[in-house]
Image 1 (cartoon, helix red, strand yellow):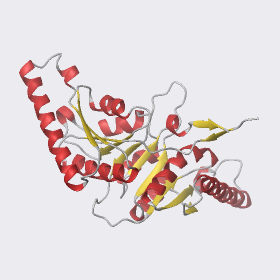
Image 2 (cartoon, one colour):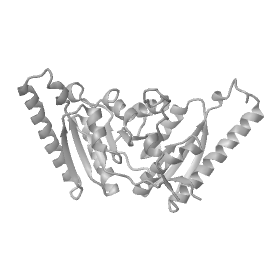
Image 3 (cartoon, helix red, strand yellow):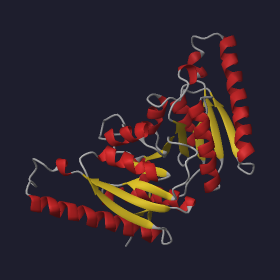
Length: 301
């Protein structure tokens, strides 16, 4: 008899968007450190959207844009290799628009890294347009680099969890912590306001729901330890009325916040959800969004 269990994930190559903005440069160096930790290749992508622009821009303008992109990639490779001399670095000048270019470069196993702002205009990577589009639509993990790049490492990765169904993407957070030789901290927010007006309105009932949440998160932590026996895993259930607010506060004391992207409702356009949307705009550390399609891969045993 066989049963299906989530596979212990392998962290793939790191793909990072390059547009010449200060935010993108910060993201590139963060991505280089991430690729170095993983022992993987760093792939730089400058997506200039010239396939579409060629329909109404003259050839001279297109050539100018292409040459500027090539120069930017060469300069960026040089900057990375000054800090990470042994890191394998590749570069790509894509004619696609940035969201499609980054998704294509990541394939089925890469991790996409974007800055939290861009230059705007012709090859923007500004969060709110391209950054949000990548985070909402990619089928591989996306990391939005936020916070102070010079902040001392906290030695921890935080996972924003809700319950047992999170195990698939939670193993990605465990892999991130393992690669950093850091602790993994599971944080779940129990918002009492979500139960007001429901059938569970008595205080005794609410207390029981809270205890069940604690038990479920502890069981989730135990499952992670089964996959990563040497990993330091802790679990915490926080009580409050603002889930994004509590999680945003937690980002001040961790190196990376990881969370699963909400499952897409049949027929609906992919979206990040309110909590993820708030965090990628207000977190004090990089935020990794793991999509359901990536998180639910399984192997039979």
